[in-house]
Length: 344
Ligand code: PLP
Image (cartoon, rainbow, N blue to C red):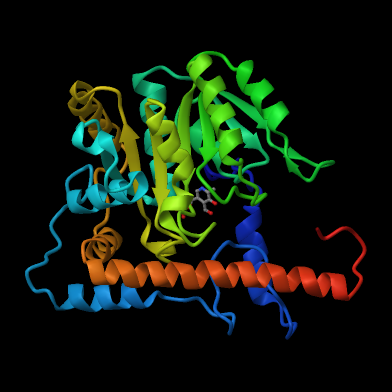
């Protein structure tokens, strides 16, 4: 008998199973509304022109080699990524109390941050929105958190944010709970708090001593503007919060399979930076030792070149405006066809 014969088949991952079913479907007019990956008018994946430019330049650069990166990643990348999130002139940059850690895309940044919080600070309770991206719970549980909790978010009746429920749930959260917040473009509802509502959320989190862990998987996708989409994170920082933010470059750079992400950390005091970095170094050392190079080099190449940075912003605007147009077109067709329901 095999030692593995007792292993039971696990459930399929919905989003990947749906994608596979889509690919196997032979219906000519099929449309995929599953995986959140950008498509062109022709329904094809899109490699951003700036990414092609960067890759060609990198391929021709004979000075680059395949040596290991440091455990915390490519520093030029983490610095630029952190700046893109915080804004060039954020005071925490000159106060030397922020840094980034290169991670395996957004998911990896969530995992590294969560594992550090569980192991080094002993945090055990985390809250995610109801509903949320289906992976938050698993990532935090696997990282060592013990108490998964939901906070109310979507109001079915009102078809909008349940701000009162949300605030009430946060008010009842134990001190040092980690609250996962979507920086913008909430997945799956697409409904973000207004600036006024963010203020109220920050008030309660400050009062209850809760730890904000932002998930920024869509910077630039919600509004087409990188700064606008980072407003929530920057606001919390301006209020004096310490926080983590998991940044993904999967969507806004179209680098899904390169697994390039950054864990941006903002601390109260510069003295904590070295110890926290050294502990996260050990977290990563025992997990995958050090990150891959290619995606981080692409992002760093683009963000450090003003002309390419501008071109990238144009690419983002093209993607976000197409997404917005598609939604409008979908709605108007549903209404034209008198599809039952309210499409407002
Ligand atoms: N967080 C949210 C809300 C997401 O929607 C996604 C991807 O769909 C991620 C994180 C992580 O993506 P990745 O690990 O590919 O960067």
